[in-house]
Each structure stands twice: as C-alpha cells, then as structure tokens.
Length: 307
Ligand SMILES: CC/C=C\C=C\CC(=O)SCCNC(=O)CCNC(=O)[C@H](O)C(C)(C)COP(=O)(O)OP(=O)(O)OC[C@H]1O[C@@H](n2cnc3c(N)ncnc32)[C@H](O)[C@@H]1OP(=O)(O)O
Picture (spheres, rainbow, N blue to C red):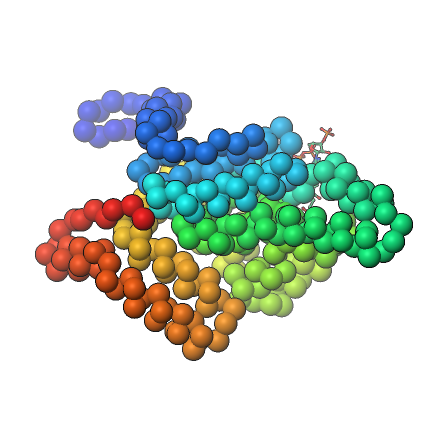
C-alpha cells in the first residue's frame, strides 16, 4: 500500500498501476506510437517511450519477427522527434530466454538446401547480419536506451542489453552468456560489447567460457548494471524518473552526447575529439545552448523543442 500524504488517501498498488495505465494511454494517444506483434510500445511520460518485449508466453525469446521488429522499432524511434529517451523491459516471467530454439533451427536449416559450402555460408552469414542489425539498432538510435532486466536474461538477451546505454535490474535478475553451452560462439554483440561495458576482461571471459549464471549482485559489483532494485515495479518507476530527467534536457545535447560516446568507444581519443569538434561547430549554433545557458544563469526552468 502507498500513502499519498497530501490527501491522506490510501491507494493500492493495483489502483496506482491502473492510474499509470490511464496516463500512459493519454500520452500514447497524442503521439505517434509504432505498433508491433512482438513488442509493446507506450509513452508513460512526455517524450519518454517504453518498449517492452512482448512474447511473455515464449519467455520473450527472439523469433524471426522479433529480430526484425526490434530493428524497425529502434530505427523509427530514432526518427521520431517526440521520442527523447527509451526504457526497455520485458513482459512476463523473464526478461528474455534468448534465441527461440525453434526459430534458430528453422533458420539454420535453410543452409541445408545447398550442397556447396560457400552457398551454405552465405545463408548463415545473412542470418547473423539480420540478427546483428537488430541489436545494433539500439546503439545506432541516438535516443538513450535504459534497459530494465528482471529474472532471466540469457544469450540474445545479453546481446540486447549490452547495446543499451544503461542497464538496471531487479534483485532476482540473473544473466547468462549461454552460447558455449549450445556449441556456439556468441555472434551478435556480446563478445564485442560486454568487455567494454564491464571493463574487466578476465571476469567477462569467465562468464563467456563457463556460461555460468551471473546474479544481480555480481552484475552490479562488476558494473554490468548501474542499480539493483527490489522488484520490477520499483525498478520501472525509478528508471522512469531517470528517463524523465534525460527527457527534460536539450535533445541536441543528449543526442550528440550519445553520438560522440558511441563513436569514441572503439577509437583513439584524438579521433573522438575531431569527431565532436565537427558536430559542435554546427550544434553550438543551436538555440538550445542559449536557452540552457540562460536557464542555468537565472536558475529557472526551460523547455526545449523536439529534435
Ligand atoms: C544467429 C544467432 C543469433 C543469436 C544467438 C543467440 C544465442 C542464445 O540466445 S543462447 C541462449 C538460448 N537460451 C537458452 O539456452 C535458455 C534455455 N531455457 C532456460 O534455461 C529456461 O527455460 C529458463 C529461461 C531459465 C526459464 O526457466 P523456467 O521459468 O523454469 O521455465 P521452463 O519450464 O524451463 O520453460 C518454459 C517453456 O519455455 C521453453 N523455452 C525455454 N527457453 C526456450 C528457448 N530459448 N526457445 C524456445 N523455448 C524455450 C521451455 O522449453 C518450456 O517449454 P514447455 O513446452 O513448457 O516445456
């Protein structure tokens, strides 16, 4: 039960959730919200979009259509001026149980239609590209992506969250780079991004070579997640507050910050510095700089136009 001090009214969590749902629909009805079969997209607060993996019965496993829709979703949110920040979570019992085994078998068996190794390889290369592009769409999207993980986050789930900007989780969350147990080397981003996210190659290699479960505390201690919350509702509420704070800032500043961070993460500092100079020779002329500087100097609030 939650006490709302001003009116001394007691609201049950279910009433609060339903009030949140109403607000959610209110914002969603006024803006352009993409619709998908495997994802649920809503707008819980101004300029904040919430993308939920929406295959709860299948434990949010990655099917062919979900790979596709993730790419389309993040690309369309990148282009949507109303969207300034994205919260990513999963519906149902688990965040994600990784790739859908049935879909993996179906797609890899397409290579068997050919006798020749080069033709088979071309089919499998195209499959990896399809999945890689889906995951990379989070990184290419200029709007910060805040992932909220609960319970299991396995295989492709880890690929997905390591392409997000920030990660948060619940106490019951656990992570597993499971691919070696399936006789695979992970190939859609974990091996490239996880060592950079965590910054500890020895431990990351242990996770990848042993496929052991990494519990939320270890994930937090190692920096895979920024914060551990007691449960999913609390996690979503708190992360939404962080998202709202980001959404209130200049979208020019936020998006160019992401562009520069992503560009610089695998390049020498000097190249990153040249890159941001080129960006800012334009962006320093934006009205956002004047507005933000004035608001800071006068200790007032300001609003920025969508970008
Ligand atoms: C080009 C390639 C690109 C990407 C490659 C990515 C590789 C990966 O993602 S590797 C990881 C693959 N995933 C797994 O190995 C997860 C296996 N599942 C589990 O460990 C568990 O099921 C669980 C996720 C921990 C959930 O446990 P629990 O809550 O106890 O539920 P279960 O009873 O075990 O499962 C319920 C139901 O779901 C089926 N299922 C589970 N995982 C998958 C899956 N990945 N694909 C398809 N189906 C899955 C499970 O078999 C059960 O089915 P029933 O019919 O109800 O028995």
